[in-house]
Length: 282
Image 1 (cartoon, rainbow, N blue to C red):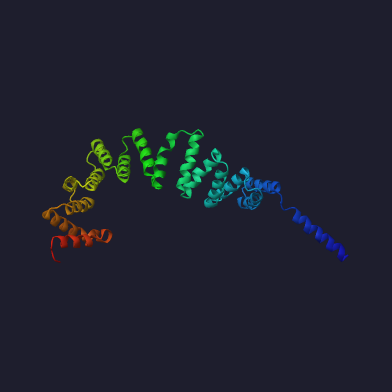
Image 2 (cartoon, rainbow, N blue to C red; image 1 turned 90 degrees about the horizontal axis):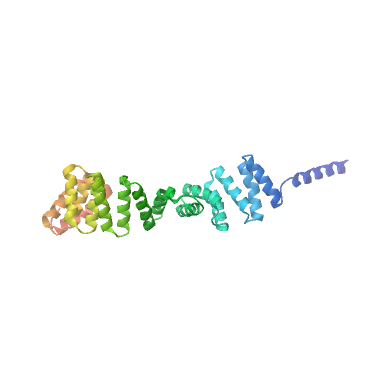
């Protein structure tokens, strides 16, 4: 009787073990079934084992990546979809997923590459100009960012933010003449807006045109004497000129600004240097 019961238990145990998927086909079917039932953790259990046996299978890798995405596990989703993209470059379906997930995990270069594939496989390039400008700016690919912001400006010349972005990118590319020309065109179109005038003053200072920079910041202060950026940058423009009276004026401006700005700007070092240059004791 005991032998009979032991045989029944053994058969039951072996029967239970035999129900667990083992082969790639079995694991794939079990994973797909779990995926279709929205049991994504269970799907990953089987699909991971299947991928271990068949590591270059497009369908398995894709399904595994999506099962992570569905549970908001974006880093793992990106890992498998990126692996899939390396194995099958130019796959539109894969890059549609990568495009969204790469931005979520802040993998900007992968997002750029995914967009390139989407454009190559049929999407109109114009719909990605804004994203490509922003993404290339994030990865400090300033030349490409400049190109796409120029395209955006051509399409929408009444967007003031494009002028500032283009001007600042030109400055990053050591093209201050272009920066100045862009800001001047913005001033002509939009009028004497503070953000354009501040940037113009900064570009002029960077070009060592200090008197023109000074004049720009004085003009801003004439409009609003409390405008902190204008007061600070006027002080900088004055301090760099070989004129004792202007250096003394810069010192007074720094002293006035110190109570409100010193924690951020560390004006004490500038004040100390000017006092030493002017031979003024504390």
